[in-house]
Amino acid sequence: MCDVRDADAVRGFVERAADRFGRIDGLVNNAGQSRMKRLDDTTAEDWRDELELKFTGVLHPSPPPGRTCGPRTREASSTSTPS
Image (cartoon, rainbow, N blue to C red; front, side, top):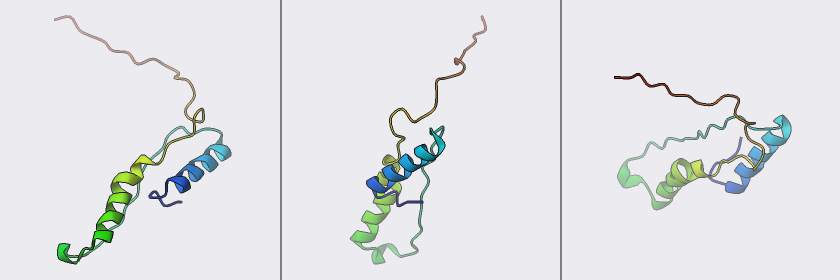
């Protein structure tokens, strides 16, 4: 686990996973917290922390170049039915 608000920690985590497993086939960005405060009790720091976690934090995870899924094994196809 790592703090998704810390881009360096996330990069290190993803790099260790790629080293351990050889490649990354999928990545789920999932983090959350819940503060049970009235709006008028919420500080600017509380607000920034929520934004960092829930909005900025999801931008940090990304697999290292060349360490993601292998080549596609089948092409997507579409079919159409004549009218």
